[in-house]
Amino acid sequence: MLDRFARVNGIELHYVEYEKNGPTLLLFPGLTANAHCFDGLLQAGLDKHFHILALDLRGRGLSDKPASGYGLAAHATDVIGLLDALPLERALLGGHSFGGLLTLYVAAHYPDRVEKIVIMDAAARLVTPTVIELIKPSLERLGKRVKSWEVYLDTIKRAPFYEGWWDPTIESYFRADVQTHADGSVQARSRPENIMEVLEQASAEDWLSHLAKIPHPAILLRGTDGFGLTGAPPVVPVENAQQTVARLADCRYAEIPGNHMTMLYGEGARCMVTAIEDFLLNHS
Image 1: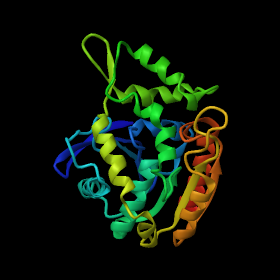
Image 2: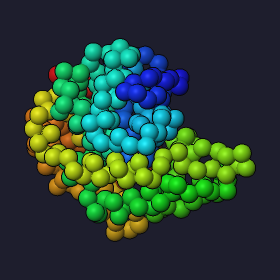
Image 3: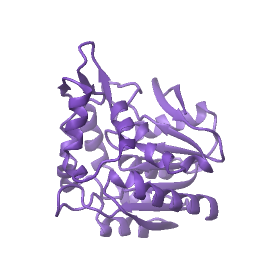
Image 4: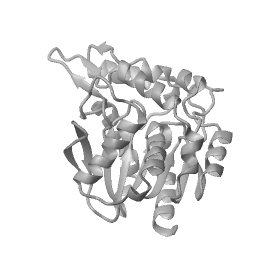
């Protein structure tokens, strides 16, 4: 695993590169996430047959954090700039949550740069008041300074969507989530005002129109469990996922054990890797 940086679209983008074992699969994290959100999939063997590049989107992780410019068009221009810089004429694309929406957007607007797409727990009607309420505990950490990494991690462990579950593999993701100050206190790298701009811009997109433009083979992987305490709904309701699948020209569908986050680790990660490998390697 190597940390890389590329100057694209007027900013520095950070990405993590894994050993080259096959075609390039470029991965996009979720709304406030960073490249290490895919560590569970890598542990489950996703790099066995692919050259994995996991990106910190603008405003997240170690990538630059401009004051504005968080619409889908700017994110997509970043992706195309990275492909140009590598250089890669075409690539497999995949993303989780908001990263899944970005995958759909790039495929719709730059079809010649994309081979196949992997959509992880995202759908056309993803940004809704219900979803914003579900992810509120995750958003509330932004902008807050916490006295130590240990306190920060303990707070994360007590989030409702991790109730009764913990996998140590996820800790590398949260470690990459924060910057450490001289006094030992930590703070999430993403800025709340930038993330709110992402939400506002994403909710304004005509996603059904975008889906109609996508010719590529696709797979949509949906986490089946509720995102919170008992009774909470999943982030992507089954009807939303099925609507997205039906609107795409060529899309498989698979259900994955776990919720929006836990599906990326343990049993869920193993199921995802199996489904992704079968789709990318065997679906023409």
